[in-house]
View 1 (tube, rainbow, N blue to C red):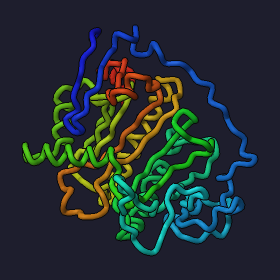
View 2 (cartoon, helix red, strand yellow; view 1 turned 180 degrees about the vertical axis):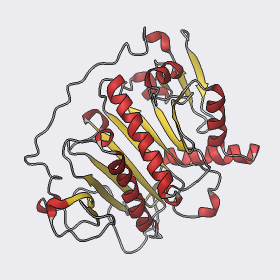
View 3 (cartoon, rainbow, N blue to C red; view 1 turned 120 degrees about the horizontal axis):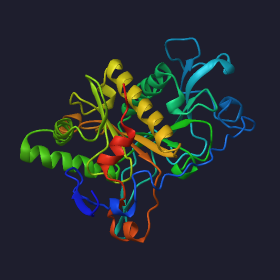
View 4 (cartoon, rainbow, N blue to C red; view 1 turned 90 degrees about the vertical axis):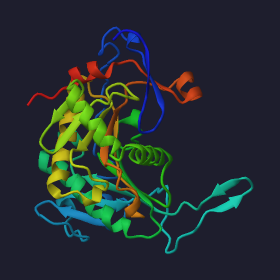
Amino acid sequence: MSSSELRKDIVSGEWVVLAPGRAKRPDAFIKKIKRERVSKKDCPFEDPQTTNHGDPLLVYPKDALHSTSRLNKRDKWRIQIIRNKYPAFRHERKCIPAISRGPYEVMEGIGYHHLLLTRDHHRNYPRLSSSEAALVFLSFQEHYKDLARDKCVKYVSFFHNWGPKAGASVYHPHYQIMALPMIPPDVGRSLKGSQQYYNKHKKCVHCTILGWERKEKKRIIYETKNVIAFIPYISREPFEARIFPKKHSSYFEDASSKIVEEVSHALRLVLQRMERRLKDPDYNFFIHSAPTHRRDKFAHYHWHIEVLPKMSVYAGFELGTGIEVTVVDPDDAARLLKIKK
């Protein structure tokens, strides 16, 4: 494909511009970055209990199979969840409703802001073992269920920023957990689009997308009996990837340990492939799941993971119109990132 094309996302309703002619080859603008290996010295997450992070909310000791809230030997943990010292949201014992302030609606920043830490200072997600990668998601799932019990929480966001271009201010691998008193706008648009598609067609929009991708066989980069990873036909960013459990499920917290392990393994392989073929880019990944409240309302939704390598910069057109431009054909991106079994 050499000419530009406008494509409309059937979930969000937003348009993107596919302009592969602006790059001579799919890998033409990929540049090797020099990844600075920051020393463990003075790292706030190397021993978080000595840097005023408090006792862990949840910890997996190095040789234990189950989590605990107690940490007897600080050098023997492999995963722990702690409170963020500089939280974007604070916890209160009661819900505080939104108020009007002039023409605006205002709400107190009530919620939770926690961090999930992995032990090794230099091993980010794709460099974890398969079992370690699975434990990241299983421990988050366990903590997610605790947060979801708070009646003030409407949505729990789990995401990872790797590298300064992706917003990571600390080198040590860490994952953020934010529990919010409202549904975030991007998630809200996704839920609305999913609901509208279901009302019209009586089926899940994401299941429809997965069916079409499996039929086309052009953009799938990894597939097993239960999990699929692909480059979306409507890509907002070059080399964007999504990972879905094949069986329809609205809620990440309901996923079996087997599915969580398979999805986490697929994510690990996708990020390994990006590291090799895209020359170690910074990236973000996050989970999109249905909200924690009114569970009967969101059966139409399909939880998944989105991966966004930081390959481009928003400029005037993107910022001025809200229309994103990607210069890599998703078909070409999939050929470059396809995982060979």
